[in-house]
Image 1 (cartoon, rainbow, N blue to C red):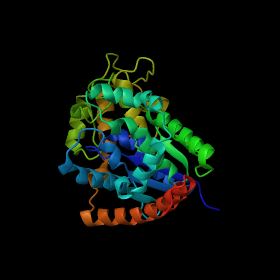
Image 2: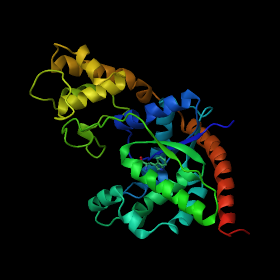
Image 3: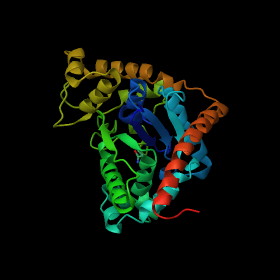
Length: 324
Ligand code: TRP
């Protein structure tokens, strides 16, 4: 019996932050180690060029994602780790899918609407982003995709495309299901109303931050006026945000975090949080892989992914009558 296929991707755009760990990497490792899935993890570099970027940095950013994959415990023996742009079937299939996609459907995508207001001259790639994502997923007969809420709409779109293609040309694709993992919403350390984002570095904890930076950032993080380490979903607030970070890294529910800090003040809580982060992030800080090693991991994964993707693309082309 072959195992169900699991696929997920991370965009290479700047340094990864703790949101990438809490929302993706820690789950990727668990899913890989469960042995329940055939896992493919890739660097979504084509997606990342839909927003402003530096060509002289892109190669490093791609390798950095692979470095973080390895530091998180993903293993090239257990999982297929590859780079999207190295497998041309992704963009070829995306083209075919674009011909099945009504313009209006993409115009209604929440992420596109949000991103395009921020970028006055949004490009077509940003618009067709979900089409490429559908190709990423459907090329591998994917059963499950671990995603956060922000990508659910894209996954629903992927399922629609699969259904549409199958109905029109005959069954080729399986409809993937989202694998909802526990993803706490991490807010900026300086403004608990805003999402933690690498575009605001001061409020953002990077996976490879030095211990002193972690201490400084946590020490200056906003708290509340209450003075007690209590969690409130309704009110949100700085302390609840820090507690969510603590809970994610200590693997504890909020009521247990409250218990640990019962009768203690913010200062004590913050220093415990900083030390926990310093300890848990050490694999990322200390991840030393030479470019050669990373290139080898990528080449090995590319080869496996390409073999699967090419078979699927040929099948698709045949179905629509485009064969040599
Ligand atoms: N859009 C995803 C994100 O930004 C990245 C991504 C691209 C992805 N292709 C994918 C995730 C396929 C899962 C499956 O988070």
